[in-house]
Length: 207
Image: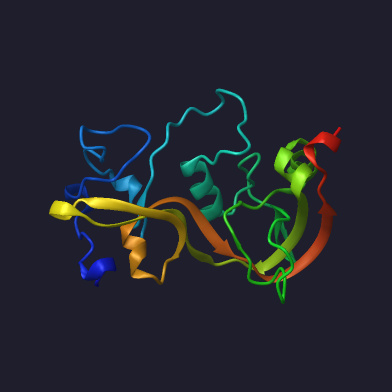
């Protein structure tokens, strides 16, 4: 398979350094070595993050790489980590209402926010600043296949060292996904049923 820039992507990731990460870097800014758990079944490399469950305060605007990936892969609640609510209408999702109203909306929208369970739905609406300010959308989806990843795409630089290009959403069907340092798993929402749409309020008006 040919990657971007007409160069073959690495076939043995442990031998390919040069990826930046936020957990531990060597003197070049890349991974000293790649762990097996950091590669998914499609050979996509995932970013690193410190794991300290139960410690610290919620940071709503920041996404934890491993928790997001696990929740999206197994369709777990984004709040409590238990299985998301599912009935004959499909999986329950709570999303910021920031996509506008394209034709067919919300059918086919791409999301990186994991689904939600019924008990956590009200809690999330009440406590998440983004949902209060931007508004929210509650839907069920009969189908939600994985679509791709969001992360930093790279190209081959001098001596074959990866050089960052830009952060973007890369479909799994795109060969460039093998040159992407993934930080979020993305699903496509299909067979959607809208349950609730609520407008947001500016922060100065929120109570």
